[in-house]
Every structure is written in C-alpha cells, then in structure tokens.
Length: 57
Image (cartoon, rainbow, N blue to C red):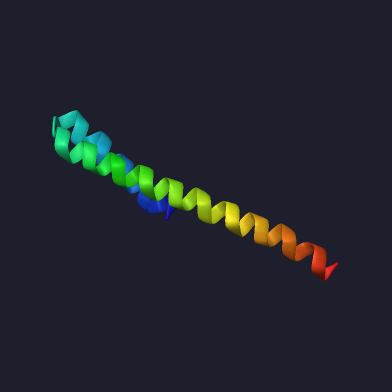
C-alpha cells in the first residue's frame, strides 16, 4: 500500500512539473488517501502484535 502511495505521489509531482494541474491534484489526493489507509493498517498491526506478545510469554 505504501508502494502505491509513493507511486501516485511521483505521478503527481511529474504532472505538476509539466503543468497538468487536474491530474496532479487527483494523484495527490489518491496518494494522501492511500498513505492514511497505510498508517491506520500499520497502527492496527502494531497494536495486535504488541497485544499478542503478552499472551504468548
């Protein structure tokens, strides 16, 4: 998921350089959404991993 977020960010930067404002804005918003989804999934995985350690030990 982080890979796709970085990909859309690169597309947004390239589109902004060439002056495609609409494409850059769309790619930027997709990159933001994917990045925040990645952060939420990472936090959930981190919490589940820490909670799972207490039961096994």
